[in-house]
Structures are given as C-alpha cells and as structure tokens.
Length: 421
Image (cartoon, rainbow, N blue to C red; front, side, top):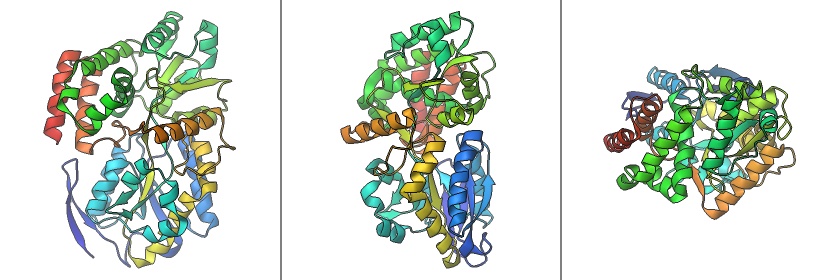
C-alpha cells in the first residue's frame, strides 16, 4: 500500500491509503461500494435509477448512505474511512473537494473510458474544471444542479393574485401578501449551507454576475467589503422576517414539504427540490411554479454532483469503469435527471423526457454556458475552496440569526475570507 500524507482544506490531516488486492470491495470486479448523501425521498428514487442501471450491467451496488443535505457528514465519514485504509470504490463529491483528493493522488484515472466515449466533447468546460485534474479525468459528473431557483405553491399564488416576481421589489411585495394571508412566506431550513444558498442568489441579484465573480471566485477584498455586499446582507435580513419561528435545524426537504402541503408560499433552493415535488405527485405549472430568483435571470449558479473514483487497485478498476460509463451514458443522464430534478451533465441529451421545469432548466443552462454566465455556486463548493466557503458560511449564518448587523457582517466577511486563504 502507498500512503499519502494529506492536509485537506478543512485543516484536517489524514492519510489517504490506497487499497490493493485486499481492499474494501470484495469481488471487486463485480461490485462497487458507493458513499453518498442522497437520502431524501426524491434523491433516493433518483439513485435507484443508477443502481438498477449498474446492476443490469452485472455490477452489484453496495450502498453507503450518510444523511446530510450539504454532504459535510459524508466527507467526515470519508476521511475516517481513508485514514483506516478502507476507502469506498466511489464517492459522491462536489467541486473543490474532488480537486483536494485528486491533488493527493488518491483518485483513479478515468482517461481511457473518457477518451473512448468522448467526454471532452459533451461536458461543459465549467464542469470539467472539477472533473479533471492535471488533464486527467478523475470523476464522472452525474448532473448539473442550478441553485438560484424559487419553488412556489401555485394555489397560494393564484389565490392571492401573485404574478411570478421578476425584481427584488416584486418579490418583497409577493412575500408581504403571502405572510399577510396567514401563510409562512418563506419555507427555510436554518442550516449553514441553506443560508448560504439563499445568500448566493441574493448577492447575484444585488450586483450581477461580474460582482458575484469578483466576490466569490476572485475573492476581491473591495467587492467583499463593498456597499453592494452590505445591501446583500440587508436583503438577507429582510428575507429572515418572512421565515417561521421553527426554521432552525430544519432539513431542506422538510422545507420543501411546507410548500408542497400549502403551508408556505416559496422556497429558495436548488433544483434538487423538484424531486420532492415530483415524489409527492405534483406537476410543474399545475401544482407548483419554478422560476429564477428575481434579479438573477439569464445567469445560472450551479453545482454538479460527481462520483469520484478512489484508487482501489487493478482488481477494482473494471467495476469502476462500468460505473463511470453507466453514469455518462446519455440514456442514464436523461432517466436519472428526470427523477432527480437536475439537468444532464452532457450537452447532447434530448429534453424530450423532461417536464416543464426540466426543459426550462436545460434551455437556461445552455444559454448561460453560451453567454459566459454559468458560475460555480459559492454555497455548494464550486466558487472557492472549502476553507473559504466555510468561513463565509459562518458569517452568513451568524448574520441570519441576528448575531451581526449588516455593516458588521461585511467586516466579518472580509476578515473570514482573508483568514481562510
């Protein structure tokens, strides 16, 4: 076995132990052990599409779910597994986490299957930024999730005569109507990654794509400490006034359920939320509405679930190649994303099987990719490394919970990003 001493972004030192013939997967050429955090109803349904597809190709699936919508718990479990010399075959990962593990030499080389199947020609460059390391494919992207969506209860909107808002002022007016009618206006779960998901969209709505890039990709101190950033925090404080008293610690899918059940008007969440609506038997434009966070139209902030393949020795490579090939097959990309709520990671997949929200998502993703307005989400690890992301989380959540006013939050944000770099 080879041992790699790694210091991951979160400051945790682990040993990445490569697994050979005595690795974690028994009968490695016919089974894969997959660590993931898809445990909600809609997510589990989507994952079954991958399990069944793989098993039809003669590869058994060993499931290792770790609950937690942002994936933080899953990454903690992964570090422990790798330290113990028992890495899974494949791991669901996001953004910079993939690059961190690749930098340590812990991930398998997928170049052969990628070249054979032409991944370079069909996967957007913004995704390849995370799926490749030093020119080598090290993960297979399952989907593209865009994060700047609003999910709304159509019955409530119709009852109150609310049109889909296209500006901040229109959004506030809509939320006032919903709250005034006795509903919870904004369904939200008070977890740092959920707070940051809203902040992503709010910052984009305040300053536009160039400001978003300066602040969260370039980590420009002037942008982070600007009046525009203070305005973003002010808007977060406004949104906080529309959240119910029991929001703290609520899982995202339970917030979705509030909209589904007609208890709340809207949820600001990535398009994985659509899977919950579909699981509940609801239909877009009949039972629920999907539209971009007002002020972010024409721009897409994204994350991409990918399965990174850990080095498991020659005995496990055949199963990994089958897994990667199954993930990247156009037929699977369509079948999976129809259920998951996301859109394909390939640009050559037909939208025929997708519902109205899916077709809209695919069209808007293609347009944003073509116009250069496709940006990795800060909240979901695709704009800045994990240490920076976590520092921003701390400030955004503290402000949302009333620990800082907006002016103090701006100062704390600049400091947090400086410390994290």
